[in-house]
Length: 286
Image 1: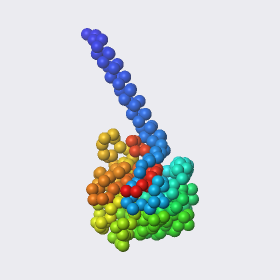
Image 2: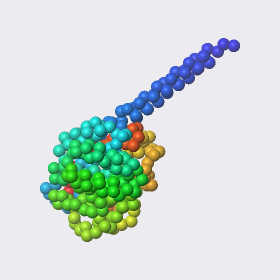
Image 3: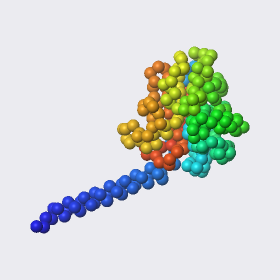
Image 4: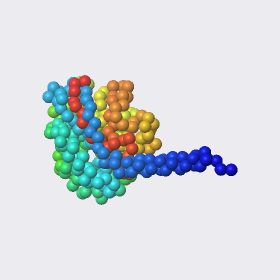
């Protein structure tokens, strides 16, 4: 027996299926072809206790996880560097993972690209990430050579040490996965009234012992914002133990606040709801 409603139902199902396929293909195309190169400049205040008056209102730009290498196009990074440079920052910090390599085979290439890294008018500082120790995060010579190369470009790589620029102290922590994270060493002798900002690649390091009575900001990277993040849900692939540490500001409740940059580069060129980020902080007195 002929049933017109059954035919209409099958047609409707076919239409819905075709629409779903088209929508899925569009999402995949967006995640692979659009968002990985759609950089967002995130502007926000960075209140620092005892900040010198001369730094009030000055701009601090954070870049992270450049991943210079085969997976990230040089032209993309150079374009992002140009955008950051146009902000005319007083200070620039880079929170690790300058390159992606098995050993040090990408180092000459990375240093050529980093010649165009934006510099802060007052200073440019950085910390290493796990990939800056090679793919196994265990090759100290790779990070040593990177640090020497960066120094030649006017960028100071801090490895469990401090540097003071225009009255603001930067505490640079070495990488957690490389097993070189030494907060007690980096913080030894830090005065309670000293204006400070900590730089640390992996936000999981905030849960490790050794921070003592440090209070203030800890600027991080590493997570890439999860790269592909379903709305309102935790990203399925997040390279941290503490799943709170995705992106943006996290109040640790003990006087420390994390800021987790979503990264510029990638290991796999796919992003959804986690655009690559340049963070432009306006320094204010906390």
